[in-house]
Length: 167
Image (cartoon, rainbow, N blue to C red; front, side, top):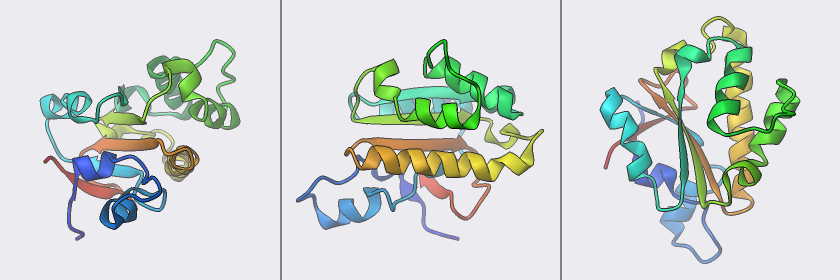
């Protein structure tokens, strides 16, 4: 089992040129974009106050995202996707790259998934697509020195999801 990553380190912005090597090693796009935090509902909700200043934090309900259509609906509502959002994978990816248009510019965007065990429970074959879409989005924003992170409530469902700890 890997050592837990402190939440503050996980949420750190991608390193700018000249940043300390330790921070740069963890927060560049090669660092984890997906993390899991085994905490109760109240502690999970506190993430919006624990995130660095200016970050846009949105809580999404995995119970509403049991299917691909549910993922599109919940993200569209939480991130204020435009009315013309096509509710397909390509349109989803495009909207995730335009978060600054919908939510305003920010040093980071954080997706908090409450009750993550229910995420895509009715479409488990789509889970890998979802994880890849989130990592691709994180890479896109990291090139702009902006953090994009996903925090799942519960235990990691995959070895590619970092174990997080509150600090």
